[in-house]
Image: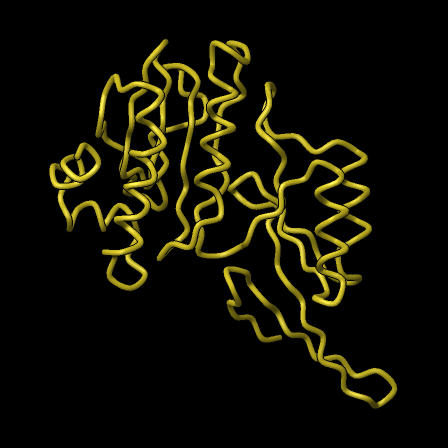
Length: 230
């Protein structure tokens, strides 16, 4: 099996031998998610049925730490599969070195108070962008932080009518690092431009596959604050 990147997607080639004839099957790895909602990330039975109908026979469905499902689709059936998934209300994203869909809370304080409409807009803007290493972006609808915002590369925390931005979380391994406060009490209108600037600066200035927390250390916290505040 050979795996490589094509146009923001992960492509897999599998060679099979059927009746002495070698066949090269090109599979595309897709990340599947559902829209943010009160109650958290859920797939309903109808959506799971659709997913089961479009994945390549003999492959597995992977549950990721990003609240996504990874599936392999035959490239010949890719357009049809994406249409079926979209009709079922499933979001299709590239897998691999991209910004992941927004890692959000369960909006336990309700749709309006926890900022669900805004979180959906943020998710739409930041998901699936090519980056040097996978980037986790979090969202919490209140200071309880049930989505563990301090464990994410970038996080947005709603504090009543304003927002705090945290960056630099990395909790893998035995020496976890928690995200630090970059900007406090900013308006809703500023949040998306700030996050976009952080991502764009990382895309342009990272060294190779430099992880975001190490990138922050190299560039400097104050420098990044200056860049996003300009």
